[in-house]
Length: 479
Ligand code: URA
Image (cartoon, rainbow, N blue to C red; front, side, top):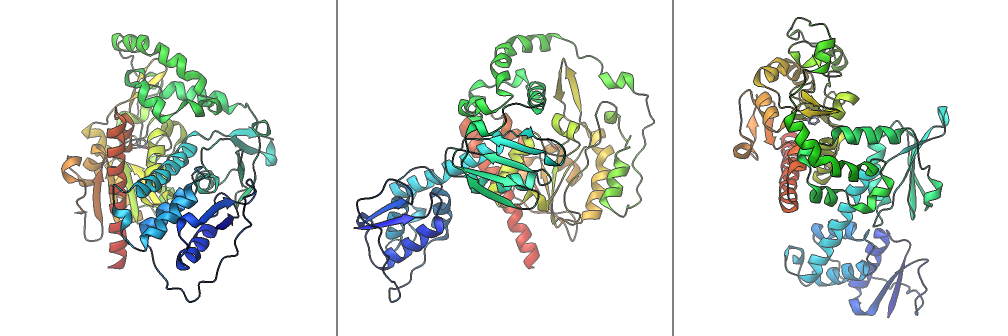
């Protein structure tokens, strides 16, 4: 019997080195006990691994390595043995990972999927509380992941909150960002994290303001935001009262006539002017110019122009419809619920958001007020046309190799005509000699799907479209 002691629960490199040596020396799965340093001591002393110098080398399917890397982060204590069994069997059947009915393959894929899901939940449900003041300000969050995902999930926060000092405390491992480097320390307790701060009220207000009772799907909402996460979410205290009030509120909303837009009455009407067509020499200049856009009436009710964001010479440009409520307040595109969905899909497609230029076809939020809620409205063709010069000028400055239009409004602006998404997705379209385009659905479409199967299917199709974008870019670069 061989006892292999890995350095930690996430020691993929240790597992991989040991597994390779054991397999090359012909040690069958049933002769190995896998454990982790610090767990209850095993009956047998740790094995000194045999040398494999003269053993025949073998390679394994890339799909196996990809799945093993994720699955090893699962909490299932059997995962090391399962993955070794698969590795062992891969030598006789090199494409075993393609077998959709093999029990070991199914289990490994399930573990990998559950780890990914846990990672996404962490991205969505970490809530920072402000701690300290002045230069010593740090944002601290408490989170309890299901699996061993702290090192996997936290680089996302380093990219997203690059300029903040933050810590994410978990029972097993803590991650810290100081603006330059991500470091990890041992686990903490909930008492180590601050429990309340002024941001809590902001979260609650925000949640109440984006909560649309007419679109409430309690089951879907509970699946996306399982109760286990509620106790760390300031907005969770709002969920039950908002659900309880939803039916009544919907009736009132339907019965009530839309009031005249609030700000329209307060602001002075300004003449509508089309944006100037000279070419600015930088995105910053273009953004500053767009801040005063009066090309259509949408500016009157919106908080601000939400201009595109991303590197000045990005090879990929993503175009959405228009800013939503959260984007209107923040002045940045795709930072609300649709943005979270987009972030998650980009991660799954292997695309780094900070390398992409993200913008919208229409740069002011169009909505109708319903009490405290601002209900999103689709922009009209004149509004899309009025805003198009901004997109054209962003395009001229950035000169991306590929533009991806997300949703019908974006497709209409990018392609200059109404373009059905279903019929055109997956097709590479020439915009001009140097620029290609693809169309796909809008991420908020995925948020609105009523049942889980449809959501999973459509999400996978969306990720596939993004992967196609990445592959088109690779080909264009290589050409
Ligand atoms: N929807 C969009 O189309 N754009 C955003 O920025 C946010 C939501």
